[in-house]
Structures are given as C-alpha cells and as structure tokens.
Length: 356
Image (tube, rainbow, N blue to C red; front, side, top):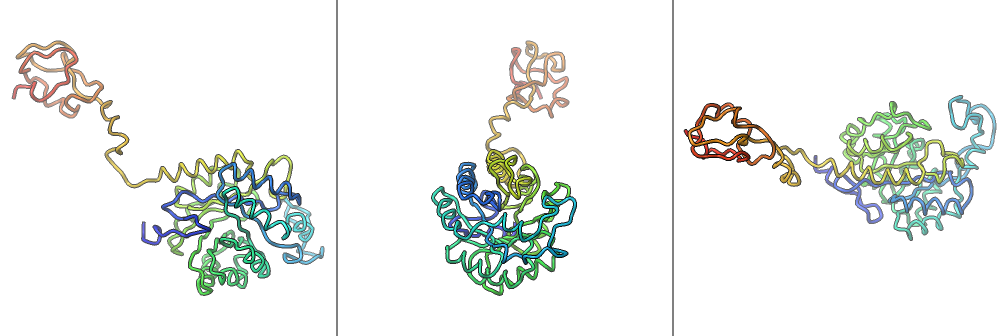
C-alpha cells in the first residue's frame, strides 16, 4: 500500500482507515416514522448490534423542495418505492425533526457510538456545527451542491461524501472544493443510487480505482439487501460501510425495503470485521499459526519390519501421515537402496537408515 493508505482519519476519536477495523454507520433516515420513541429504540438497537455510529438526515420539506404538485415534483417512476408520492409530502414524512437531534446524538454517545448527520442545506450545517458533530456526511444527491460541500468543508471537520451517480469530474470538483475550503480529511463512499440497489449494479471494483484516483479512503454506502456486498467491499479496501437501519422491515418506514434489521446489522459488524482481519499480507509457506499443522503432512515410514541390508521399496515403505520421516519428494531416490540397520514397522525413515 502507498503511504496515504496507511494514514488514518480521526472521526470523533475513532481512527478510520486501512489499518483499522471497518467503521460501520447505521443510517436511521426516516425509518422512525415520525416517532421519537421509535428513533430512540433504533439508536439503542444499533448500539446493541455493534454499530460504531448512527447517522441522521438534517432537512425540512421546505429546505428540500417546493410545496407544489406540478410536473417534476411527483415521483413518476413505476419501479420506485415511492411511486406517486409528492416530493414535499414525502420529505415531510421522512424528515427527522431538528428538535430531536441533540437528544438522539446524546443518547447515541451515552451508548458508546458516534452520531452525526447529512446536512441538506447550509443552515443545516450551522445547526449541526452547533451540536458539535464529529464529521459531516454529504449525500449522493447533494454531491453536486458545491456551495453546500464548501460550507461543510469550511468547518474543518472530516467530510464523508457519497458518490452515487457521480462522474469522475463530479467527484473531482467536490473533492477539490472541500480541500480548498480547508478540509483534508475526506472519505468517499461508492454508492449506487437505486433503492433498493441490485448487487449486479454495485460495481465494487470501482472502490480501488476511486481510491487511487483521489488518494483517499473509499468505503461503501450500500442499498443492496443483506450484507454480502458490504463484506466484499472490505476486501476491496473499504474502511467505512454505511447501511440504512430499521427495527422491523415489515412494520414499514420510508426506507424499510432496503434497510437492515438489528440481527442483520450485528451480522454486518461481525462479518466485515472478519473480512478485514482476513486480508492480512501476501504470505507463503504457512503462517506461524499453521506450524503445528505441518506434522500432519505425509512422509516416508517403514510399513513392514526391515532387517539390516534389506532393500527398500514399496513392499516395506509407505508414504503416510505424520510428517516426521523423509519428505515424499525423496521416494524415487531411495528405491532399491539398502537399510543400514533393523527398522521396526512404524519407524520414520531417516537418511541414517539408508546405505549410501
């Protein structure tokens, strides 16, 4: 790995990077269905599942769109989870009230998790900065909102930016804007902006390419079902995984269809950590942990009692486990040679047993 890949980003006291276990973010989104009690229960369940952070979304319907039903303001895609929804009313249902933020952040912190949010306008950045969030998250749809990126970056806090739909030039503009505004700690997230996303459209091989192109850590914001894509992403070097979270998919929630339930989030935390541990380094010859297992390879043993001067061959030798005798690669060399001494069945054959 290059030097920058060994550098870590400090997010609220937690080091994020290739040399550290994956940082798992549980995105609450609007799955609280406008119930603070449900939102608190989600935070608690995320902590019990082992998530390292919870994330909110900070906006109002008025900061997101206009209260109109004219063309373009109603979701018309037949395959959308929100087909027929008016944008304004959808955002009203999905928004997390500003008044909840501090309580949910404090509760998450008390349970050992970090807590932050995605601001969707510049006023939201100021609001979140007032709550002393450890970082800011820029959502995929806002990556091209350069004034917003500049505003968040100007706080000096680390910036996590999702890249769904973004071209290389889109990402370059956002990254360069953030750096010029004073933010050097940037994490990009590979993301597919379909809800849910299909594994075939996830293109995880982009992670390593994006990481090389922008010389920064690249994780995954994952909208696929299950944990397979996220675990695989860790093998491509992803140090951060963000997943939408819900207490019970069957109970509903605006993002429930592509959100993980608590037991699945726990699996995600465990399996991404295992995947990270398994990466290791290029190694041949067996690890230190494998040394004892080498005795269970095969070697050459005496299979019938042998007298001094007897010829050695397949009639009185055999290649078996364990590995305390001569290695099988010497089998052809010792055929027809004579024994130097009496050898009992079960003796591990050694060079001293063979006449030169």
